[in-house]
Image (cartoon, rainbow, N blue to C red; front, side):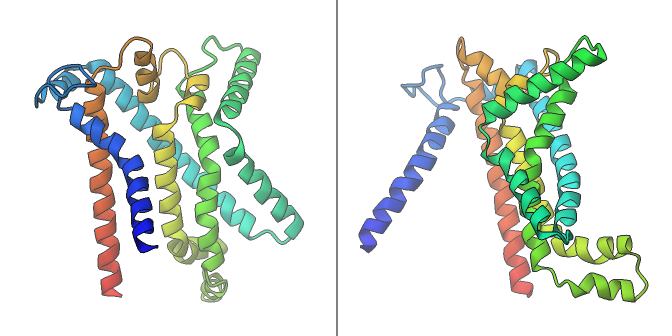
Length: 264
């Protein structure tokens, strides 16, 4: 049984990580071939740093992901606190259900519905460019909200309900009690929600495809446009750099978490 479990685990990890390892390997290939490794070279990394279009798309992607993550975190945290403090259990249950709907919806349904909404509103306002960076930002913030709410809500439930009351007894206003007591308690959930929102926005293609304008292109949209002709190996190099950055970030996060546990 133990051997079978190990074999299954190796199979799962192989399915997950072998494609990434192949991508990393061929980012160092000296030719464009994706079937034969003809020699080790940094050629495609040099090509990547000479390609201004890729860096503009990457910059746009990071700006959009950061802005949508910050907005979703602020709005989602306030929404989670509001839902948590509701007294009517039926209304609370209904709002929780409605909050989960965007996560269950297929991305294509969300993307098309938002596109129609933006085009309709833009037509009413007489706008020439009905789709732009701002429509993408609204769309990304919207689909990120449920993930932030679901990350913050468990921390609110774990919090000692008497802490805010004690702070107010000592002279704090409800707002001061929130920032001095509640916010510190739920901060891990807020950070988790923000990281999840940033990652989801960074990776999104379908919703971006339907809500983007002609003047703002993200990296997933650029790569999709390349698939109609040819995905050049410099995209493998960029993917390798991004994966390495995420790996370093995860290692630093785990090291920090281990040090905190040792201190406790």
